[in-house]
View (cartoon, rainbow, N blue to C red):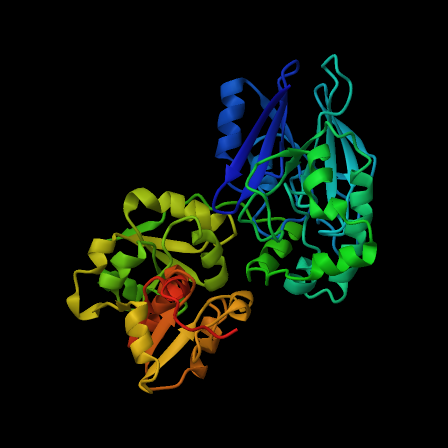
Amino acid sequence: MFFRSFFDENLAQMSYLVGCERTGEAIVIDPARSIDPYLKIAKKKGFNIIASAETHIHADFLSGSREIAKNCNITVYVSDEGDENWKYHQVEGVNYTFLKDSSTFNVGFVEFQVMHTPGHTPESISFILTDKGAAFSQPMGIFTGDFVFVGEIGRPDLLEKSVGIAGSAESGARLMFESLQRFKELPDFMQVWPAHGAGSACGKALGAVPMSTVGYEKLNNWGLKEENKEDFVKSLLTGQSTPPKYFAMMKKLNKIGPPLVNETEIERLETPDELIKYGSNTVLLDTRRAKEFAKEHLEGAINIPFNQSFTNWAGELIGYDQDIVLIAAEEHVNKIKESLSSIGLDRVVSSIEPAFTLRDQERIESYEEVNVQKLRDLLDDENYHLIDVRNQSEWNDGRIEGADLKTLRSLPDLLDDLPEGKTYLVHCRSGARSAIAASLMQANGYKDVKNVKGGYLAWMKEKFPVKS
């Protein structure tokens, strides 16, 4: 048997390719929308991809099953469990096989047995892998999707918070407890292959180790150690973060079938004057580092640096009904498009080199940074207004007195609430989110804005007063 894992750092998403070396057939588990890595490995190792399988209707990325089906003659294995109102739709031209608890299917001599594991979602299933071609006939491991992670379990509240299905969080937590009792009956030696690692919003505190074993999780995973159902439900539902805005769209698209990726080359612009062809519903997305953007940038552009947090903040702040013009170096454009495509932000219409946007000095803006020492001196000045763009949980743990909480994800909808005629000081934990916020404010007409260098961490380091 051949086994290869793939990790998308931007989404903290794990996917897997499993091949039978006797027959040359392979399957991809929970494929990402960008399928080139699977196709390249399969070609290199001499495998023919004949199937893909999904553990559940994903909320945090677009599935690549339809993309693989476009390129390969495959069967797509998906769940037929759960709520009748929340099931996969069949997409024309894709061969689906719908699975129930205890169903089995094979890829060559590799067997996959379905275990219905509701909790994260009602339809969630896991795949128990047994290599029938090996002398050892016991199961090797289990693909758990968003059911069991390393050191954590899946959150049950996404359908309620992202899709609006009232009451599904508590019922999901109770189903999760029952699913975990089944999981604990599995042999300790079985490997655990989850769909996410540290950094995913699909659980509270996912471990950074990519895989585990059933036995290790029994010893170390709080969800498997809690024996009282009511205490378990309370603990699981407490402290879950607000899911990213784009999760609702991901759920919808993965349910009905994601659109195929548009591989048409986008237009390369050479002057900012060419931007006049785009309407007011177009986002000018500058992906440079925050310091470069702060120094000088095109009026009206927002700044989301192309780093590990890029995909998440693009999904939070850009609408699916908006066109996108990328302000980025040409060598980065395809990677940026791929990152946006992973969550269905497909409306990239053109790109332009950052240097080209800076040629018209009359349309150039900038913003300043202030350190926390300067911030402290300005807090009593009524001409300044301090904005905290951290999350609610961070605010609850401690804040700078006099700050106005406007979380970054909600800031675009709350700009009209800001007092007029002020100089706005913006801070977050470290200065990264507040830099994005400063760019959003300037793009929306709030020109006199300054980013607090080092953010709340720098404030705490100086032992300045906080309010809890």
